[in-house]
Length: 208
Image (cartoon, helix red, strand yellow):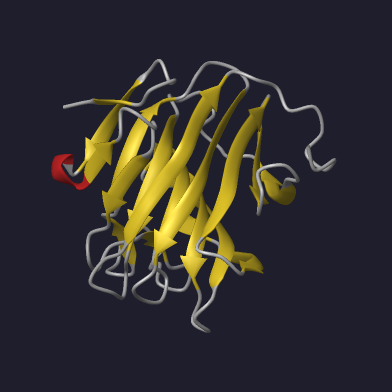
């Protein structure tokens, strides 16, 4: 099964099939996250080459093949938070060991927060800033071999969250959307104004 998002040429692969829906009039994408799910590998839970129970890769995803070369994926992400670490996510993945995500996530203090994770066999975890609303604009860019995560309250002024590279850049790259609820019974996420364009960002730090 594949899903088509208006305005985006490539087809998206949903997991699971029944969690994702598209409003063909507005182009918005909605999903109900799966309770008890996440995509994360605890950096303190790795034991040599053994995958432990601290590794989760079971959250709902909607992914497509990334364009060749530079691109930008963006959306206005609205989350009806139900519990800590609930999140709506822009996600990119080479494989289960090599991926990154930009999250609008519910913090332990009960606030929406911009969080990013880069996974090279194990995950890091970086908090950026809190959001005093139920929505925020998120964007992922690729420029050459470098990725950049940006967030914006209004979709106009984009704040750099992080720039990074990943190994395995020769492999096919998947990009798209994710929803997670590691500690709750699920949350509802809407990705409004989803855009995937072949565009080169001029400067990661000029807030454009």
